[in-house]
Image 1 (cartoon, helix red, strand yellow):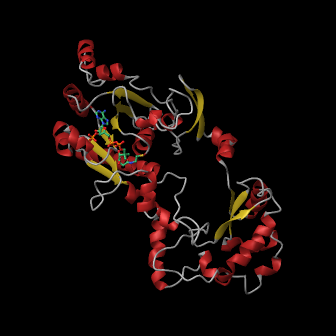
Image 2 (tube, rainbow, N blue to C red; image 1 turned 180 degrees about the vertical axis):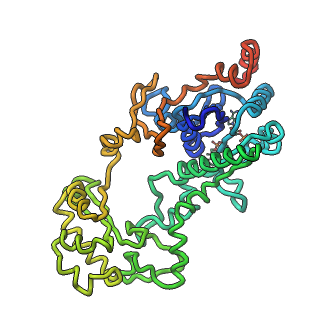
Image 3 (spheres, rainbow, N blue to C red; image 1 turned 45 degrees about the horizontal axis):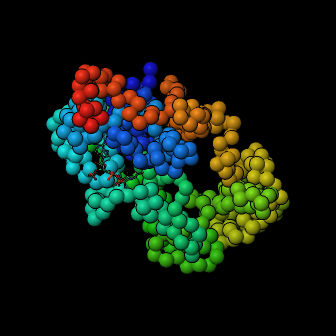
Length: 415
Ligand code: COA
């Protein structure tokens, strides 16, 4: 049995943030019914296509294990059908621009009236306030949530990260909100409104940067490279380059082959507990006793010298050799892995974090499977649905329409 088996999710999500959320719920066994505009569908089906006229990887990698129904929920007939869906489903999820469902005629009050057990979950760019009516995409959220101002090199432009913390990050937050609301409903019998704003989700993931903002009041952030470089701090958390965000200083260092391979680097953390091992490995055993290097506090103003010396050693090894040598000595290091290396990684294939999926139009493609592993609930990753692939079966099964009623809805352009 799948954990969320029996939970019907009316999935009005599109692009990335919402689909990430409902895909997770589908992996845990919910019946996710993706509602799409007839003939159009989720815009990502046609975005960044690598094969003409075939659902893009953008879409197929974000909509696994769902069923697709087409419905024009702005038409009269469509509204009638949507009302029946709301009666029958447990959760409704959407990430339209602010107010879109209200404009369709389905504000929260109306949804509650139709089905008081309904959990209605939304992602928006911003929570209530000055920007609540704004449309938002990933990078806007990264900028507005504090990620961009704290990412990148000191003195350089604010930088966005490749990790989709605004979209997929907020999708994860919303999924937890939905499961919590389902748990609440078990006890109270009532549904509730669940919202997650992308700005809030990003700020939550940038929590340590707000920590540093407050630490600034007590003086320089001594673990930042700029402290060792003698560059004064301003009044806001600065960009930290590749400095470690925690109390153990770390940096990205070049490895053998870096001149021709853009990913020949390692992340190296000078964890205090294994400082002696680090000194031995890099050929500086005397640093373990030297008062200029022996303690974390003594090293902080000298991090440039420390990391330059470590790098002189890492540059004689490949990133994997660094890993092989440091791991048995408990020195925390990590290779910078390219997407190519991740796609081919045998362990990730074995755990199905990277999976190969078959699709009737595109053939086989790679996807990221469920990153959360439950011992009793094995996830089977299924391909994304074609546009409207399940319209008739869903209208019959879930909404209880007869063949004649379906034909009538088709004629009216509602499905
Ligand atoms: N039947 C009828 N109409 C439908 C429909 C359906 N099945 N599905 C969508 N629509 C309509 C919507 O009701 C909306 O109409 P309206 O503008 O008259 O209210 C319209 O299609 C477009 O929806 P919208 O969400 O405004 O799309 P957009 O392409 O203009 O904007 C975003 C895209 C992502 C910027 C916007 O949806 C947004 O800000 N979402 C919230 C934040 C978010 O999730 N962003 C990240 C996306 S990865």
